[in-house]
Image (cartoon, rainbow, N blue to C red; front, side, top):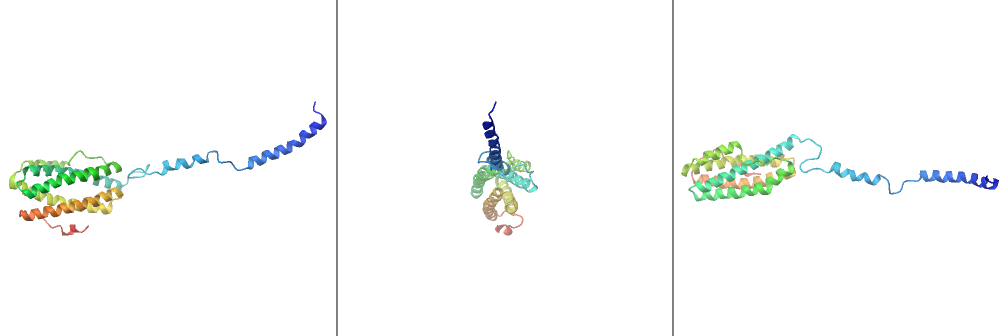
Length: 218
């Protein structure tokens, strides 16, 4: 049995222990616990994927950027194949030199600019020219001599005028900054090509429709 003096001491210590426990319960938590884990979840929720934010549906403008990049790659592939054909079939040195420039620079534009951007924005890289351009290439394969040069010059003037419009419009309207950049860079290159082929058309007395004065401004 507990003696009376010991029992009295034990009863006196109980309130003190209860008070200490209450104070400990009210004290703020130390640096441990679950709080450090909360910020680590934030980056995965806010980090955007290339071209668009994760978890968001592509907008019409996203699809517009993708369509432009795909079309630019298709057109570039057609320029390369037509240029290679002109290098073989043309009888004029200036046309051959222009064709060689088309092969070199359009291939560089595709490899250095548009293919990397296509991957960034999730656009499917085309396997080659469009069906329309393939038919035109087949038509050109059946031509030769002056007839080939005339058709090639007229085609290059028409295509580069249209391409310059498309590239300049995309440079203003693109939502993705990478697409906007390559569109502007491409417009600069195409404008130089257009000036060259228009001079060749004039030198060969090849009639072309319309003028491109409005295209001189960026």
